[in-house]
Image 1 (cartoon, rainbow, N blue to C red):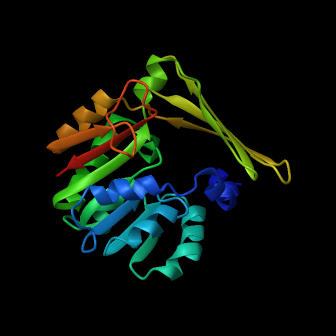
Image 2 (spheres, rainbow, N blue to C red):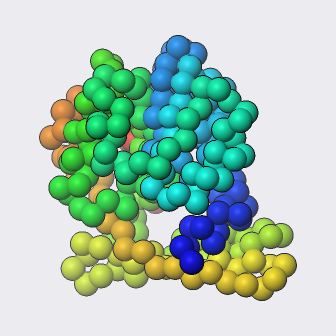
Length: 243
């Protein structure tokens, strides 16, 4: 069974809605009620739904059909300005067209599922094309400078009354990829779901070079959704790039 289909029922217990993300997006603009937003890697749609309360229109996409199915069931009927679709993030220009969005949001470490520099540059170029004049691309990934430079092999375990979610990293010798290994335990049944997926550990310097090559002129970096400065020990790398 597909891993994400297996865990979709428990996803909100693993990654509950982070209101700080909503605040970060809203603070990127003076006013959002007349703006259109694209949410990439939306998962089960909680963030997309919350953003739809503040934006004129929200289109939300994910590559996993089971996630989109749950998102559509749970949130689709609640908001007329919210649409969920199964799309690849490398097909946004074809699916949405040029100058169609005021902002593109890509949180949850989605970006590093791309294969490497070529796909990343392709995505950045497409996102810039899809954005309207003065539009903004908002990104969030793990701070991989910290992971690699400090030889960190795990992220903090997520645990509550319902689940335990263990997250480990295994860096490849050439450092071009790392394996993200997860173990999800459902406490009521004791059932476990294990998964390993290769990720591209994108460093700040490389992302800066790729965004610049794609034509972004104003790029800001933060260490958290409170917009505090990026530090060596920041767990997250958050980016606001303006077209």
